[in-house]
Image (cartoon, rainbow over all chains, first blue to last red; front, top):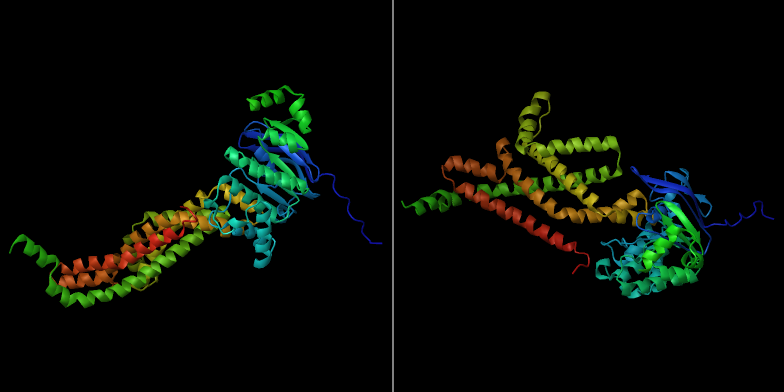
Length: 253
Length: 227
């Protein structure tokens, strides 16, 4: 018998409770709870300024919450004793404006963290990066620069970069909002593939159809509060709150 | 003598040119050496100060800003004269070449710091977010993601500024540095003819054109995949 029992698997991959955040005089998050089960896909919907981006950035402490707790896979992210750089290896992030490093090739964009954070050798890092590029369908772009790629391709590279460190959860902040409509499908296909692989994801997005298809849970944020949450079916077909109904009506037109 | 002949005699006198040409030419070596020293130390120190400022320690930043603002405001000649004629009164005696190097180096460093700092702050915040989100530390992000981009943004204003400041090497003639203008000045007083000055001017152009060309080549090197 081992002396220490195996720790029970946490019920939530991500447990954010009571998150508050102000920028100067503006309170953007007024006490938000976000509970994400492992392997699930959670959608955040809501108007601009509702706090979706801020909430996602609090979840990997790119923004410091003023109050609340954020526990990722059992680790208290807000504790001063937590090595936040180590914790961030487990959390991938994809951005609306892609944020690829323009001065590095696509391959180097992905291997930078693998070399410097994960300490991989050049050979291992390149191999892993190529595997990620295969996953998002762009292995032939390895030596291109971001400026030479379309928006959809850049975003798929962004996803590859986020995946490279093998994170337990991926946060996506409006991943398709900056893309031309015909490029959106390519990115969503990758997201679907990730979901099939069991990767936990939290996505802030306006892609309602995709949410309806793929989301396990949908949260509607407005004015810094979670106005309503439920399954995709509940939120889109049977919203309970008036504000939710109004928002969905606006989106449809 | 016609006006044209007088012009040629005064500024393009071949006889005077051959007589003093070699002497003035030897000033090129001094100008080049001093120029290289100023440009290298100025840019390296300026870069270091900007990178230090990015770390965000308030007391350090205060000192950096005070240094930078003072040396951007002072005329280089004033700094040179204070160091060369003033410092001996407090027991610090520096050779004229060192005075030139330190003065112009400090001026270039302060402008370079501001240029690099502007570059650093112009790098989009998204670059910080992306790099930190993958677990890179502040220092790693600065070194591998931010600074390369900041340097690229800084090259055009930096080369401009470096050329402008190193031309101040001519001020060395005021404290006895034997560079191009200093020697030309001696030739001027000995020959009572302005041709040495013309030669000095031409030599300055010859010395600095490579720097200008090099800076253009450098700018071209930073077009990362852009069409």
